[in-house]
Length: 187
Image (cartoon, rainbow, N blue to C red; front, side):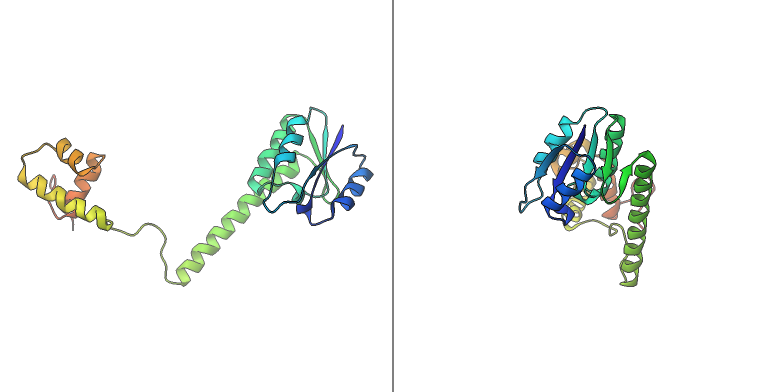
């Protein structure tokens, strides 16, 4: 069965989309009403009703209310269920087309990341976390150093009293406070 999904998101009036989908031989239509928020109610109903051998007919891939990465998963899921996708604008989609979209999506993400890093460097920004401790962590580090110097509590008791969850963090706090631990002192 050829099932059509119509959504104003494609930028084409619903009536025009329906006419174009009828020319593809579509007999059943699901129409997503226009709303302020992007809705997927009708889309999810339509997707649940698709059966093996069906063809999902769209005006354009832009009709689908999904992000690019979700589109790749969605198309792969349809392919696994033996559901074909055909669009008025892009034509039939097969596994090769879906892989191309997936590779392109990865490429675009990579390029955007590299551009963002380059732009940040040009503005004098460096990526990553700032070295050192936050103000609250510095306070805990000083308290940990005082308790450790007293020596009247076990490490576990000090960690519990300060709300520190791991020994590694506790000892890192001590080193940040300037204490020598196991022959290692903060430079």
